[in-house]
Each structure stands twice: as C-alpha cells, then as structure tokens.
Length: 517
Image (cartoon, rainbow, N blue to C red; front, side, top):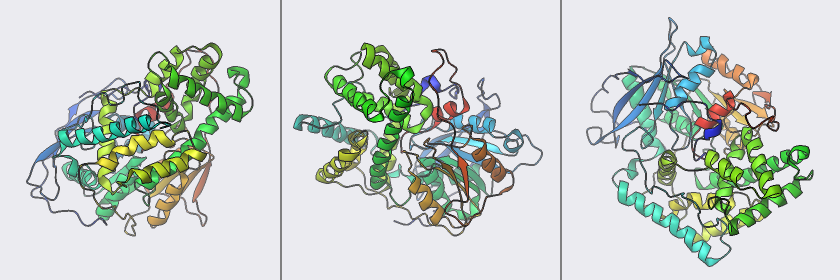
C-alpha cells in the first residue's frame, strides 16, 4: 500500500546480473547502543541507529544511517535475532518489530530478539528520500489517457518526478537497490554480534530476503517469506501480472457487495454493481468528490481493498452513499484513510521508485508501455493505467540499472513460504516460483484467500505452521505442489455500526505493510 490506512491501524508509530559474494569490510561494525522508545502498544520496544557504507564496495567511503528497533528476548536461551520487513520497497519496519513480537505466541517470541529496521532511504533512516513533496496531491489527471492531453500530462508527471529525484539525490540513487539493502542487513547482523540471523519478510520483503539468502546462505538460520514476489519477473513483468490480478480482486469486492444487496442496495448481480462503480468513476472524472476525489483518486482509494478485505465494508458504504444520495463526504473520508499521501507516503513512493527503477532494466520506449497497458486495460481495466503511471518514472530513471539477481539457492536450511491463492499484490505464481527456486523450502497455501500478508492476521492454521517453524525449525512436507493447505480466513461482513471496532490483528498488520510491490 502507498500509505498506512489510518482508520484501521491501531498500532502507534515508533518515536524516535547474478548476485555474487559480499564485498570485504574495512573494519568491524561498531556495537549498537539501544535506547527505550516504548509505545503504549509495545512497551518493551528499543531503538538504535547504525552507520553503513553508502557503497558496500567502498566500505571506507561515505556512510549513511539506518534506524533500528528491537524487542529483546526474555527467555533464558535465545535463538538470536529475527529481522522483520514489511515490504514495499519503501515500508518502515520499526513498528513491525513490536507487532510481530506481540502477535507471535509468547513462548516463541520470548526466544528471539525481534529486530525492525527502516531500509536505506526510508523513514527515520538518513538520508530519507522525498523526491517531489506533494506528488500525489489531488486532483491528478485521469489515469485513463482518453485524450492526447491526458497522456502527455501523465507522462510529464512521470518524467518530472524522475528528473527531480536525480536532481535531489543523484549521489544516492546508484545505491538504492535491493542488493545494497541486503548488504545493509548483513551489517545489522554484524552489529548485533550474531553469526546467523533469522528473517521474516512480507511482500517485497520476500524478495529482499531471498537476495540476502543468495548473498549469505551460511548466515541464514531460518527464513520465512509471506506473500511472495515472483523473482523471475522483477519488476516490469511482475507489475503487469499485478494489474491483472487486482482486477480479479476488485471484481471479488463487487461480488461481495452484491451478496449484501440488502445492506448496500447496489444490486444482486456483480456485473451490475461493477457497472455502477465505473459510472461513479466517470462522474468523479467530471466533478471530483469534495474537490478532492477524482477518477485517479477513486482508484487509489479502492486499490487497498485488493490488499485486504477488511477494508471492504468501509469502501462499500462510501460507494453506496455516493450512488444513492450523491454524498461525497464518505468518499473523501475513505480516500483520506486509505489513499491520501502524507510525508511518510511521499518518502515511501520515492524509495519505491528508486529501488524498483534501480534494481533492473525497464523498457525505455513509451510505445511498449502504451501497448502493454492497452492490452491489460481491454480485459482488466481497474488498475491497468493507474499502475502504469505509478511505475512510469522508471522509463526516465536517471541512474544506471543493476543486474537482476538470480535467487536460486541450494544452500539454505529448510525455509517456510506462505502464499494465498488469490493474492493480487503478489500473485500465486510467485510463491510457486520461489518454492521451486529455493531447494528444500516448504510452501503453505491459503486456499481461496485473497489478502496480501496472511500470517499473524488471525488464521490459526497458518499461524500454527509459522510458530512451529520459528520454535524448532519444523516444516510441513508433501509430494504435492503445496506442502500444506489452510482454509481461507472468513470474508468480512457489513459494519454493525459506524462505531464498530476495527482494531483487529489483521487490520493492524495491514496498516503496517509497505507500499505496493
């Protein structure tokens, strides 16, 4: 997600080519100094900072700073550090450490130092990127370029964003890539005084984890990947697959609204509900709700529903209020809650583009982008153009591109993978691909599940496999495509009242997960 969804997030913010071997370090990393940075939700949280090389091939050169967090182990015997990452790229991991430590079974969490971190460029790390403050300020041009003027306006936004990133951070951008972030993780390991680390990553964090594991397989103790990026499609192809999958997930939301026609009154036929949604989009393109939610902003608002169905009742209520009574306030409210981009969001998007554009080559020819977007839009219109413009700065990116890493790995201990079959942000094929590439891994599937980030969200079956693995390394084994299958978590129901409690574990987690990847 581009921004943490405030209305559903009860967690407090924390205060305070092929991959080859790692470059040599000039000197041992200095030990960390931890200070209390507790919140009401996470009273044992501690924070520290760590200097790392901007360029790991030149360890004596310029240093940058990473912000770290920790929930210390409390058991007599520790299993060492468990690094956690929420994805993105661009997501802050500081609060995630507190969440993971509190959501795991107490006897499992007690055995680990749970370590969160803001990756280079993110949040409280320094420098923190913010290429174009206000880049997503509403109302933006309609994402569907029905006229040459709209196409040019969107192209100019992408071009100017890339140029401004280069102007502000030209000295940093060549080192904003996944391999550099993975090397930062090894600096964290060294500063912690650990010979090996365990790692738990969501979304883009799964790709970061597999790259680290390729660089340093001997330093991996346990590896958990949840909602898995397809490492064979980084990044242009993965985004096209995502666009198709988000359309399917949007239609699942339309079908859910049709199922509750008695509540929303938008029709019992999902196709009719979908037609109403596109009619609303067309109306907002002409007259934005509250002068704030135009067609592009409406897409932004409903995209989070593809990540997490806990948002569906709020989206459905705003949708129905607009259709029946032309009320615009509910649409503005859900836009502010789920899609409005603040300074944290500006930072997250800046890092997202820097890493994705810097990781690997993207097409430089707009004709290729246009052709692919039109082909997707013809059958899967919901996010096709919105996501095209979201990634279009990569067409103009000012720095060179790193080679795409090969993450195939035969040297790891047993690893544990989690994937929902109907995940839109990281479609199911990514989990299958990673399972094939990581020899000895075990894949746990949530059959029929569509959420992105599925462990520690309330599914006892999934969480049982996670706890067993972190406790003693136990993984399920099967001869089939999946090593274990769990039933999906139940879909939500309409809100009982406007004051309905929203602080479920799933909603807290999905408020912490990083920007779309």
